[in-house]
Image (cartoon, rainbow, N blue to C red; front, side, top):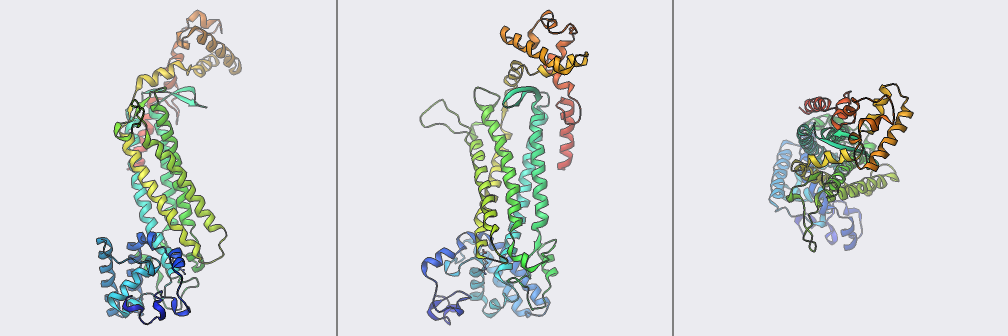
Length: 468
Ligand code: ARG
């Protein structure tokens, strides 16, 4: 027992235990403690406490001597935490009590004065917001890295032709660069969502105290400024009770993971020998313990799998919140593990995916062959007829018959002879072969957002500018 507990009967060492006739049971103590996981908020808790103490001094509530003692004590605690020597204990429930208790041990009464005009309710909301703000910044940096890697790969492959799919059936030829840029767009929106969410995260709850505010003459704007918040939460009850900012983050994270997961699914398909479009570097694959020939794209599969747990965390937080009456309830302690795991999973997935993507080798010939074999230019053929005056529905029918004939002959559309093609329409002349060729098909789609290599180049250049 520390010196601080001696005046409490029965060794009841919680700051609130004065009101209680008996200590909590051991099981309840373990059940309610969050220190095992919320200690990761420690640095933010200290940062918040320093700002709070400085404000208390500025408005005349804390003496300079008390402020100095608190700042020195907290600095020492910070170094203990970083050194791994801080005496964490579930006797003190959570990160806030652990630090406050240690501070009081170190500096005496000044430590006990720190909690003036503050509650753990506004304290924890502040800590989580500081943590999440830093996490979002980190995620945004990682997302930018991924976007850059994507741009480099797309740039190399503006002229690489692959089959574009709908229903996973060959549809129309596209530039691989164009396909990759589709993901760039998704990740760009993900980054925008996160940046937008950050604006709502970056508001200060401190000053709300337990829920109703405080009778002390606090200066919330000073604390907000000190902690780099863009403003304060405008309503004290809302400030301590809502976690919509965390839910919003998880929603943005779930979407980002969904995009990564789709990409991973494609990499897995493309690496399968039936496609043979790409090879993923050995360092991102694993073998089988029984089948010597195997090289499995485990990293891609794991990211795809991990998207499930992030979706789960989003639902967990929504469910956590949906029936809580105002204001703070202990339910909110359950926000941390899903949130932390969402951040960890997202960061790891982004980092490993980016490295993996940078090491992908593209088999251009296999992609080209797949596009050639899939009658991918059938639409171009129909468009050709339309441009000669055939109504589109008739052109569609004529081309369908041509595809059947090519299928019977075992060749692609461009493999049919001019005379054969002319059976389907007398308007066909030898310039049809330009339309039937993959290169011609790509080149013709040269409007904004189209797959013409020159257009893709321009899209990449524009995207690069947006990242600068
Ligand atoms: N550990 C708590 C949490 O994570 C801190 C706030 C507790 N406040 C309270 N009045 N019980 O939410």
